[in-house]
Image 1: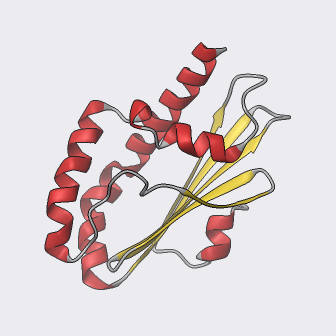
Image 2 (image 1 turned 135 degrees about the vertical axis):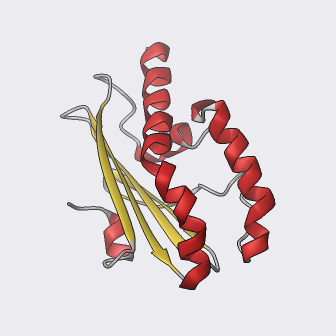
Length: 148
């Protein structure tokens, strides 16, 4: 499994990789996919509510509040864009890679905890990460297909 995320964090505390079919002729730019995936339009309403609660509670364990611009593209190498978020309690990387020849998108998430705060924070986040991230990507794909 190749991803810039694993290059930045070769021994993660948590890792997840998911592959999705995308419509033929979809945007090949991985940075554009990052913007679509992390757009509020791709985020389900219950997740928006959870993110709002997270932004209120995160400072209690010394974490930064998230906000617009938290999930920005840090770098692009080839067909993969990397999002990097570093905080006191954990570091997070998301690699979004596009294979336009096969019409596939690969989303790789890697997390490294910093002490008990990171582990505590990730207990609820880890429980919902897979389904939430999957739903955000699927919404971005549906929006892309609808735009034609």
